[in-house]
Image 1 (cartoon, each protein chain N blue to C red):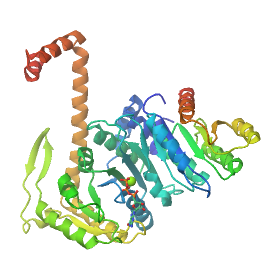
Image 2 (cartoon, chains in turn green, cyan; image 1 turned 90 degrees about the vertical axis):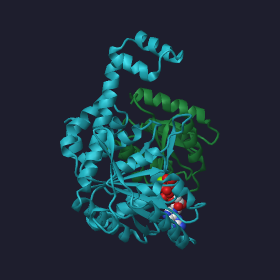
Image 3 (tube, rainbow over the protein chains, first blue to last red; image 1 turned 30 degrees about the horizontal axis):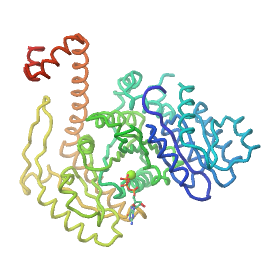
Image 4 (cartoon, rainbow over the protein chains, first blue to last red; image 1 turned 180 degrees about the vertical axis):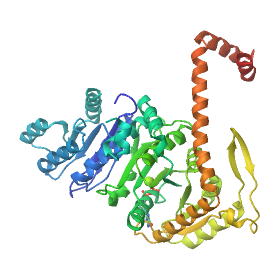
Length: 134
Length: 331
Ligand SMILES: Nc1nc2c(ncn2[C@@H]2O[C@H](COP(=O)(O)OP(=O)(O)OP(=O)(O)O)[C@@H](O)[C@H]2O)c(=O)[nH]1
Ligand SMILES: [Mg+2]
């Protein structure tokens, strides 16, 4: 999708914590000229995949602090594939152990960002992902 | 299978892709709009507008649940939020209040940024609505924020317009200032659980009395025609007096009554022929603006860049007026 603005879904799955990090990322992406669809807390993988489909986003970003990423991410990717959105990239924020990072990248997660990550890096990676998709 | 066919078969990915094409005004989007046009004209378009934070999204969530529960209608939601004028980006957060609707294949929610397209927002909204209509949605709920010209333009497209107010929003003067009450078919006082509802309702009803009856203005061959409003006691059945309804969207109180008021409005539209007039307004504004756009583009294509710049520089030097220039070019 070269035409139009880049559309990103930002979601916070799981029952844990707050969505401060997700909101910071959402605002940074907006300031970079992207259209961010923000869905709020406690999203199930089904809700995330459904929103990604309805909003025809280019990229999905999720924030997971609970440690449940190895259960949630494959499920979300699988649902997106079933919906015909296997070309939509997924990025992840949270505290992820190194050994999981390798596996998640193999599954196709395009970016993984810890607490210290800069939002500029996220913006740059999304732009790259979207170019590849077009 | 092509995109239009898949859309008419209610394929959700095709619907979503089509909405993107149409929003971007791409060639593919225009092609699909043209192909699906014969299958449009069935949906009831309902506009929901009002100041930020009055509870529009929460209300849309409840209305969608109402139409699913009571009518088994298929419901589409188009939630429009402003783009940042500086970066062109946007945070679209209306879905946060619509989580009850997830998992229902007969509901489809789409968020849209206004993209600062002057006057174009009403046109792109109307095109998005056509897509939902062709995809078999019976009810299309369009949420917009505020009371600017864009909201008024979108309200003109809707068959039924709800204006949402809430008590204690630093107060009711805002509503008159914006003149937004005039576009309301139904005035919803949401957050009726809050203190001060009585005062808000009294103030708004007072303003409505002043505002009514409003003459109806519509386009006739691109010119504005004013149809005089009837006196309150003759032709009453041909005139709609704004209804006022209280709701608590947070828990669903008053939603059934609001739903019934909307149905009453639809009956009025059907019986008084206003439905057909409204349809004509919608299609004519699409047709007129396409005609304008196309003629303008075609004319610029034919005029050389130098000729355009030359006349523009004469205008800047005030050797010729913009009016005179147009006459010279087209005369
Ligand atoms: N007390 C009370 N709060 C409500 C009611 N309806 C909505 N709210 C709350 O009002 C806040 C704003 O609700 P939204 O539905 O997001 O309002 P909105 O008009 O869509 O807001 P924007 O899209 O940002 O303009 C939320 O915190 C809701 O929970 C209600 O009936 N009573
Ligand atoms: Mg809203």
